[in-house]
Length: 611
Picture 1 (cartoon, rainbow, N blue to C red):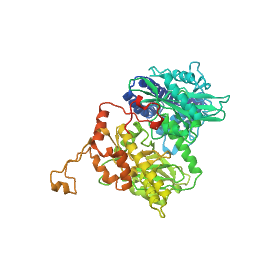
Picture 2 (cartoon, rainbow, N blue to C red):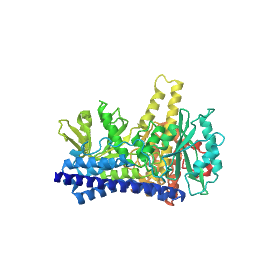
Picture 3 (cartoon, rainbow, N blue to C red):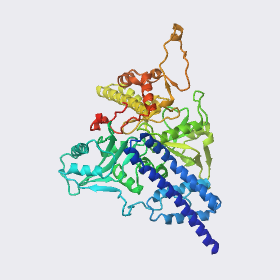
Picture 4 (cartoon, rainbow, N blue to C red):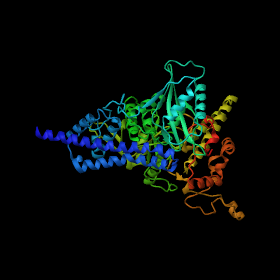
């Protein structure tokens, strides 16, 4: 019995050390998130962006730190599997009164899988399913804020209530005119509610933490009236004079979905009980998967954990096969999908055509750049996994042949679990939300406009679809410029349409910072020979970009060209790019709003965006 007692103590000590590692991580994560309030108050925009980038690295640093400690102090990798089962049981016991148990479970998985061999990645040793409920967790410390505050206004005192609501966030910078702004919000709420009767339960429920991102702070809550609930968000910005203004009032699930889009940077928000925030937000956005809400809050590892659980659940309840994704094949990435699942899977090929002078590490660096950057609603977030297993029976043979041909170094097919079922193991894969490629979206419009017989209604719909797609494409590029991003390969196929009609960029192997590019006008030919030459007769440096040469590649269709030249002709002018490069180099941070211009209360009061 004595050795077993020693084993139990060792298992407890390892579990306790692992939880200490997580607690250190979340304390640092939360401290950095809380500091975003001071950075907002002092208009430290570069500091805010830097903190958003650095916070993403916190998790992996703490996992490595904890793994190293367990190996050094307990020789964790040499311990028998029976001990690891005890470690997990002790860990569950330590989480009973924990306020972030779901995050701590994911941290356990990360450390454990770093130490153990892949064949042990199963439910006996890691948390494939959650073991501790996150329902109704609250911070019960006397001085702690609740997850949300409730306000009970009437129509008569609505403005006073809104002023109290703003004051409760204790922002240490004055509003330009708080009463005016609350009047704007009250009027917008009354317009949204219409001629409804206020029921006995009429209230505003507002999350206690401000949501900080880029140059904005967002108050997030919901209106409850009878059986109806209306989500809302109030963006708070600095005006040109350095005072605070409420810039807009966003209402409804669609507005919130855009605000919390997978194509935007993660929020900085101080949360004692993140699961309570997720529960509140999911109630306002039921169509948004919980994994994406965790991602939006900066808890990307938990987002990955939930995504993978959803993915395994989908595999168990579907029968279709993975296939090569439809559309034009990429030169750098091999893309496949499962038709019934709304995501695509991307692996980096082992070799590329001669015109693609790049390496696997450089491509991974580009994806990391996008992960850490402010994506301004125009670059898709990606989930990155290593050593992902798929059932071989669910793979189309043509897809397996494609991977064997273009990415053999990433592919392993084996019976790793010893159960007689072959498994496809991909050593590295990116996963993104599926979108309609913009070239396909435009082609559908061309086909609609030329299908026989061509009706007036069909022609009108086709023209509207082309106009919407082309305008959004140009807006997407201008928003990327605002974020100091040059997309590199600007072909239509590298952009997609989301369900909200937004155009998003998703091909990152050629992106560069605007400030690293040299935007040039094409030199004037010096003689007839140069003018008639079919070759480039002038010198071109590795970072040189000639915007006026974009046209032949993008604007071959007359209908597309007409819309583009009407709305975005400046994108073909090197002067446009040079001017914005210069402003960014001087330290200017552009406003890029996650809502339409017409929703703004006083657009002239704050700095305008690029478009």
